Structure formats: structure tokens, C-alpha cells
Image (cartoon, rainbow, N blue to C red; front, side):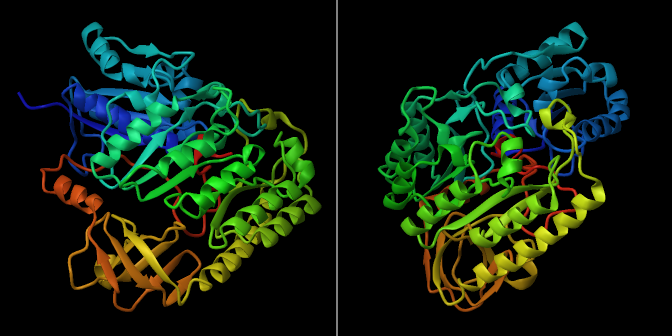
Length: 494
């Protein structure tokens, strides 16, 4: 009897990506194997890990489920599971609209998936189980990481904010912090496996400590990461301006392996709109944080999220956003046209902005940010950077004879392929010769190649038989966003 195969389709934020790695680990622990590349639903188990933040998320889900219905009819024993934020939100309607779904599970009980699949198979009826609170911290579950050299590490789940455009607190629950010792133990275990870069993950990552009564817990955690031998790069996402304190800035600047990179969601530059969004900071406070960050780390690259056309936004409000962008000099920005998200307070607000107005403002903002991104990237020309080689970052690498990777500040760098072997996870030293708005080029010779334990880990993993493609990340791409983009970071957007 051949082994059963599985496929996980992931939509939304980094938290969902992390959860999907856990789902893959759970299924493999239960005896399933990854479906071959290009299976496109031709697996014994297909799991949808959904997002409720993205526009028309339900239509996209039901469209995909509809395409699987005839496949399931032709394949006795095939199972379909739906989890994530949309499952938590629409628990009572999924099996009504798509009765061929076998399992519906929520954000708090992903560890139950194998049991629910088996129960559905034995009882021959759909299993819908939605927990109202977290049953087990995701990082305590088995995992199948998608990278040999970089890893997500969850430090908290849930969110205590009440932003009027966001439904996440209702779906992920109140913030729950993980014990610092458990976080550090996981990081040390990852480093022992060859991981050299970790990203600390939480819906409001720098509020870490509120659940355990220590306002400086996050800065202490960053400093503790600096003591872990073999850990070369530490990043985190996403922080909230309300909780971004001076001790965090000091920890970033004084901890060598914490990278000079910050993703700080702005959402709007208008104080009136920020108030309507229930964002607890104002333009002056936001720009003040950026000034402090740059004073401590002059080379820091700062990115952001911005919503255009929030209900009630006037032209004057929008001009305040444009002013803030000019002052902030973001390396890049993920910009979104506001659209109604059912279940959020903003969905029923007066003065919803006409689509054509939102579109016109959006295009102006994108054009401004493109100009700034290019100007900021041009400042990198002539610099010598250490680049961690990445896998799959350069879509044209084969044709251009280049490799790609990330600089310490997370800028994407394409560099000329050196004569000696270079593996993902290794580190190269290159000189930047050209800048585009969303990437840098190093067209000269690579001045140094450092083979790393992370590269060894990648080589070891790829020497083993592969079971198929990795989790479909669904993360934002660098470049001009689509006219109606989905919210990057999903529930990680703050």
C-alpha cells in the first residue's frame, strides 16, 4: 500500500506560514508524505490554511474548494480540510456551502488536524472543531521547516489591540506570551540544526511581556539572542509604534546579530484617521521613533504598511500620509486600498470612500514611494555588503548567471555568480554597483565567500530525496503592489 500524500495551501500572514509548517510536521508525523510538485489538488489530503484579512478571502476559498469537488468525487478516500482565520470566523457556514469538506478547524487547535481527519474517515461525516482559546502553543508542535538556514520562531499569539480595520483579535484571541526560556531553547535547537537566521514572530511582537508583566521583556529577549553562538541574524515582525520603547532601540543597536532592519506599520499619516482607526499614536510620535532608530542605527532600513482610503479620509488626511512618507524615507512600503472587511467596526462606518478616489490616491502614493525607494537604494551604490545567499529569491538568476540574497538590512541583492561553489545559507561579500527601486546589483567579482554551517545544512537537506514543493507562502512580493493587494502580514500587520 502506497503512502498517503498531503498538500498544504497557505494564504495570508507570516503567522499562517508558521502554522503551515506545523501542519506539515503534524501530517508527516501521522505518516503522510508531501505530494509531488505540481500535484495541484491531486493529493490524498488537501489542507487550506486561510486568512480572513484578505479581500474576498471567502470567495477565493470557495472557488478553490469548488475546483476540488470533482477531483474528490473521482478519488474515494480523498479528504479536504479548512483551517486558519476564515475557518475560525465562518465555522458554521463552510460545510454548508461546501459539504464535501471533511474537516474544519480553527486557529487555536491546529494540533488536532490528524485526529480530526481520522475521525472524519471513520465516521464518514464532516468534523468541525473550533477551540475558543489556545490549546497548545504552536511551537510545541512538530514542524517541517521550509528553509534549512532560516526559521520563524513564534514568541506570542493573539493581539490586545482594537484597530477598527482588523478582525484578528476576534479570531486569534488575546495576546498570550510564550516563556522566554522556551523561546531561547527552540532557537538554540534550530541553530544546532544549522539555522543561522531567525525571525521572531508575533501579531504585536514588541508587546511581548505584557502577558507576563515585564515591559522590557522584548528588549531582554533580543539581547539574549545575541548570546547564542552560531546565530548570525535576528529579525522580528511586526511591531506596533505604541509599544516601541527606547530599550528596544538600544537592544537593537547594541546586539550585533540583531539586524539593522525595522518594519513599522504606519497605516495613516493623518492624526484624525489614526484616531478613527483606534491607533494609539500620532504622526509626530511615529516620526520620532524613526528619528531615534536612525540615530542609533544610521544604516537601518525601515519599511511600513499603509492603508489608503480608510472611511472618512479626506484629501487633507491623505496629504498628511504623503507628508509622513516624505519625512520617513521608507526603504519600501506595502500599500493597500481600503476595502470593507465584514465583522470589523470600520465596515459600518459612514463616509466610505468611492473606489475611484481610493485608486487615484493609491497610485499617487505608490509613485511617491517608488521614487523614495529608488533614491534610498542609490545610497547603497559603492558600499561593500555581506549578503546571505538565499534560495528562490532571484527569478532570473539562471538566465543572468547571478545568485541572490539578503543584505543585513534585508535589501535584496543580485550578485555575479562566483567561480567557487556557493550554497544558500553561505555568506558572500560584494560591492554594490547599481540600484533599482526594489533590488541592488553587485556586478563585479565576489570579494569573499564564507561557507557556513547553514550552507552545510542546506546541502545535507538537498542531498536527501525530496517529497515535493514547500508550503505556498503567500507572502508579499517586492515591487509595485497590485491595484487591489491583499493585506501583507495579514494578522501580523500592526
